Length: 306
Image (cartoon, rainbow, N blue to C red; front, side, top):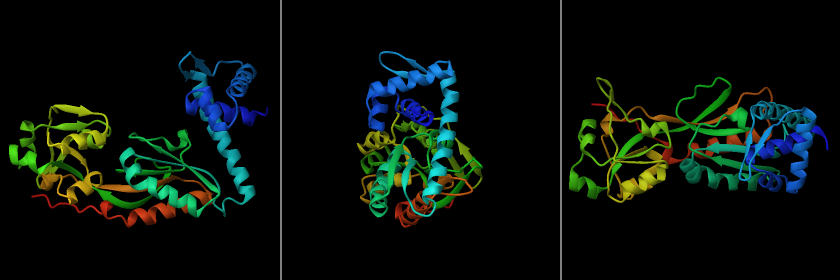
């Protein structure tokens, strides 16, 4: 077995978190993967993976080797793609990441449409509520909500969303509509900790930013759970406007404190800067950008702060 194949097996084990899962991804047998890793560790002369009966973890040396493997295999793939003409014709494996709700609502339907149009491209979507390091995790395209801080990325703005406070009409009928952020101290608040955009409740006003510390009665780790609890009439939550566009349009949820909303957040399609961008990335970015720019849920209107 050549070294590149050993690297690909090691990469699969590290990313999938186990030998069996890596074997399924590579369409081979678990013993073959186990032998390849053992041979690799023996040749290198150090342990790369720490194994238990239930899990596999990278050692310190394994973490360093994983980064090198990704870089080397990426260079090899790019060389092969260039030789095969994939910088002109979309083909190969393409990875995209987005937050869970955004990915489920907007990205998933578009993935099927894209692969139908480009039969030689195989797509994998990583939907997680965290900021993924694109270079380290081998991601080609990301959809980011918020301002970027990395300088090694290209970004195309496709829309913007607001941070909104919402509850049901029934809840507001029983407890009253808050007129100022300070009124939230007396409200039933359910907070999502899935994103710092939602767990840090900042407000704005004509006189400048407003900051209030609330003690939520409920904290959940998923945005949809917070939305479900608020939709039941129990209390108030803060979400991104696209996440409840349907419920607001149907009158199931109402927005409050709109005059105190912070500025809208940009929604951007992001890809890494590179001298030669493969056709699969160019076409997917163009496709995604065009579709998302047409989505009414991503056309936020900034409120006038009074």
